[in-house]
Image (cartoon, rainbow over all chains, first blue to last red; front, side, top):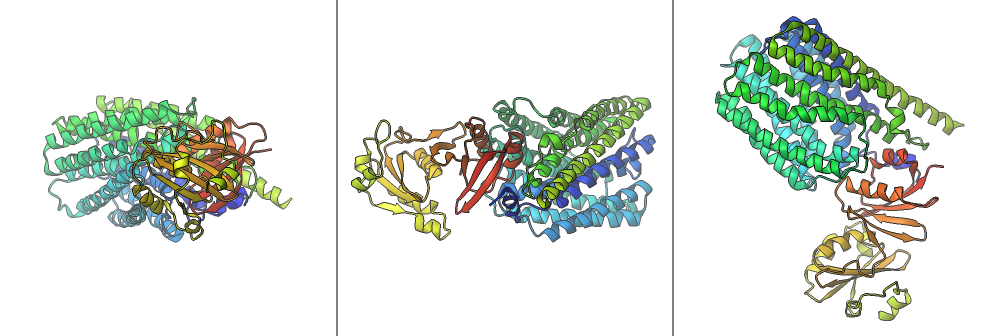
Length: 430
Length: 193
């Protein structure tokens, strides 16, 4: 058997590359669109504590369009390989994208322009896509008992997904019906479940597999994963529950448990890093450092509104640090590394030499993205706290420039992969 | 049986362990037929091991060196001594003595991740089965980096390691050949010419 047939022989677990890449390309596109909307609607950013408009639309382009889209693309390819069990039929995964990607676009358009039909239609499509994703992941995990550190986080993510979807749909209907007693509290609970629950648990769970694998560090002991899952689960119940029933001290306790989970998680990650074979960390890891620094900062920021500080600006700062600081930095880091990695995995499918990771990853666009993303984080945070317009606009311009650079990176990785495959096909024919 | 083993040549440096004479009379548990039927014999072996009393012995016949099993039983107090009798036939002697010298007399090296490596005629072998990810990848790359020029590395894995190929490519290596058997996926790694 030759390398090509080796890769082709695992059809049950290795998807055709076009499937995960459609999720990744969509994530890069929605990332760019989100920054455009934030810049266009920058008048509504300062003092934002909810309500329809460009800011809420941009926020959902990041959360649904970039974060969840990347998580789906990565999970459909990595989960079956990690668990050694197929995720589900390819048609179901394709259907997931067909429902979800237009759903995100429609929902964002509905939020931006207050089109009720688009909000309802988009939200329904998004929930259908997410439900399919949750169902596929749940069915896969049900048969897994040898990766407790990963699976417990994935189960927490699935449970959070159910909670956030129910609350999210209620919030959308409330825009027109006005039946919720406290829209802001429900929105905050929805944010906790979406940010720390669904995306946070997926990020932490996948970290235990991906980070040691990318840096060639030792495996993180299952006990560490079990402990962070326990602390996080309890923190999520208290955090979201406290917000829902209006008891701030409960939410603060949830944030403190989240901080404890973060300490255990980061210590586990750092221990793996200390034993790594790769002495020089790759460029993507700079964004991981930013994300890891801002995860505990976001939890500290969460304490402020929970303990009675005014929502403007503290709730807004917390949401920004959670979504753009911790999650977006982490997800863009993984996206930056995983796109060329999967391309390299598939590159020997025709039997030729595999494409080198280093040849598939252009460095300049990710350097520009890192600089712009970091500048955006600093400038927008300062603007939110001080209520200053100019740092905000500069920060949004930096964020947009970074998104353009990341878009160039995405296109270039795909172009280099296709070029490699075309050369391999030509050699095979010759 | 002693003659059979001796004729297969278990006279390595330092000689066989002293306890081997006690183990030679134990009837071997042949798991080759189970593997040929596609059944993982792990549960059968563990059941047999649980019936052994301190000072007793267990003998396993397998189609390959069952390194993960040796590691796991070492954790339960078994010393082990294995030899290839002929192609597709290994006999491994286990002795329940606390497992203090379980590697004694064995021609294998155990890496920091717990992978066993040994040399055979067709190259440098490494067994990474039953290791938690990403330790198999680490152990393989560590061995690849110290392999001699023109040397082939033969990996014994329990699955096809998809994530290994990009890292091998970065180091100028490739997966040249793969064979899949029950609980033993073998990969032949070679330098890209």
